[in-house]
Length: 133
Image (tube, rainbow, N blue to C red; front, side):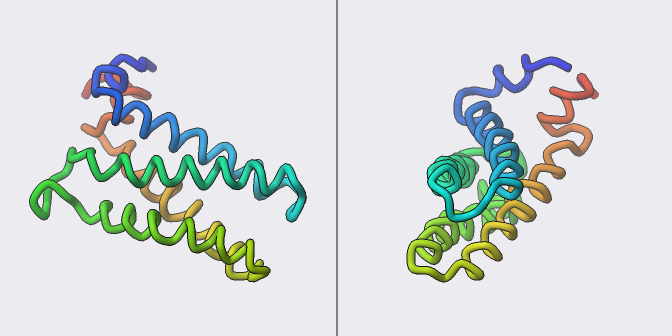
């Protein structure tokens, strides 16, 4: 394992990756911790910020180009940029079921599923973990 390919990719890419990893870890903590507490809300705002960074920074990463400089994963980024603030707003307005369902969805689709695709052979995170192709 070497972080060199990641760091060589530039600040947008490595901050995107580190924010995604931090959001994934923090998301697991959030699911395990008691809900509605001050720590849950505080860490939740941090998680939301990380998710917005991950989604926003992804719009400047163009490793796969299918529609101009973009790929279908960028659709998920736009959905995340809109949906995470809406999910926070839902919690603040007492719509906890809506909030919980949305946050679970973002953990699944925006972090887990999208994250898995970064480990395909030839992709950057594959090189970080398994070495050059």
